[in-house]
Image 1 (cartoon, rainbow, N blue to C red):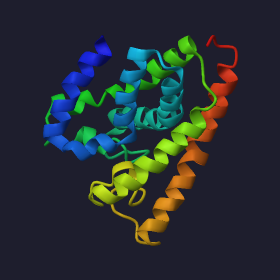
Image 2 (image 1 turned 135 degrees about the vertical axis):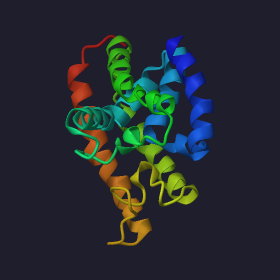
Image 3 (image 1 turned 135 degrees about the horizontal axis):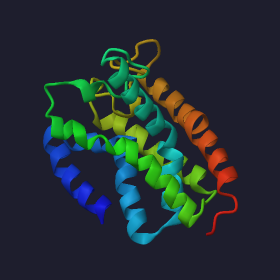
Image 4 (image 1 turned 90 degrees about the horizontal axis):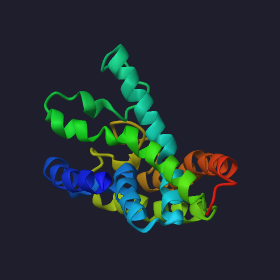
Length: 192
């Protein structure tokens, strides 16, 4: 119930503040798919979202805490700089604290429902749809899902479409596969 209410609050606020294209971020997709998984207790959806966002959400959380402790300019990654933008309303920025809760919720759901090994394949296929769509429909300055480069500015060291292909290989190998291996090991005996 809490997750449903939170999403019902977040969607209109983000829509007005950031626009609908912002919902292409992997974390936002995970928030919505997790809601569906909670309603249906779907093990595959939970497993896919865990594979997709556990590492990025952990990096976001560490970066945010690091900036809180050492100052907004002391960044480990570029993922949380918007949280310290005083021009954005505090309430809107506060909604982004779901990045702390989502991984905990997903791990609990994987523990409760079990890990489905096909999640790696299906999440990779989902990313191979979302990343090109993001590349085609979003502004390079927004750089949603980092499809235009790592950081605030679009990369210029290779053609954009080749960078996208590189990203489509790097994300499954660098984020999804290690998470899949860890979840497979930790939750091998979890009840289905």
